[in-house]
Length: 450
Image: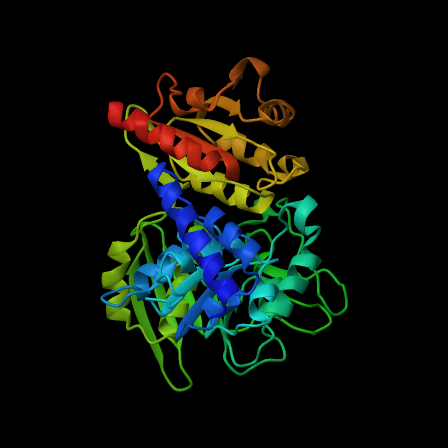
């Protein structure tokens, strides 16, 4: 390793130590400091890995990565960027934490969450063994633009033919990444989870043929543009998944049918997560683990080691119970709201909307959340809004039909963490990125005071 790389590594590790002493997590800053001094350090460390699986896509990366880490990390050391720091500095910080002072990685296997825009920069000089794609949905408009830009970045980042691609058969955009590369391409998708035509007002930016531009024909939708589709001109249709999942909601388990050339093996994995979108995350991780050779028996055992990442339906006990959930774009928010509908108990719903760089400065996506369909069946006794754009969210709720007297605006995050409402069992706190970790810390304090 070059002198410059060693210098950057030392500075990064010392930054990590200082942050640790101050009680900070240091998921990105050590990598940022190291990269400023040694721009090639990330590439040099990545190329020491013997096995690497990358998880990318718009929604569900952090949860899928956590599932896959639990499936793979059993008696054999793997490293991961569990904090969700998925830009280059976050990847470098995770690698620095597992290297010695001379730049030698002590752990040679990794499961890494990688941002869509970062993916082609990483795979240009480093080729992982496998890439998992969760979905391709419209995200932060001021950062990614429309979905065609995200798809272009993913296509560039997954084009290396020697890397196994595990992608979503039910999403026409994610599926398209496998077109023209039959070797080492595996599809996963759901069966038996059919949404009704009542949901056809959801945002469906990707529901058009990439070849002829015609609107795709759907037998059914699951959420967003995800479902059973075909091009009316016959250019493509939903492929038969290599790994077909069936979510048994009542039993809270995912049944996976694995199609081999001459056999079909079925196995069941207990699901520790809520919402159909999270079942996709579980299915994606299980599919990738099977591609890497993990047995169904091991999957069933190791899923018990799964701990939800921060803000992914993270539960804080109390009276009322508080549940913290990340939202960042309309399709993801709609999926969360649908999961809330499954809770038949009275609840309070609190939106915490920030507009920092990591959240996206453009909050026009709030108007694409399907609140009009959620509100009548929400069983929400109270609506609360906080964050730097809390007033914008309050206005959105008012336009969706909530009486202004039922909407409470909170000025500080501490108020959000301690919020309660009469007659409710659960307060669901739906938050954007930058408020997520501060809220998690505050909610832990409140729960510990009990």
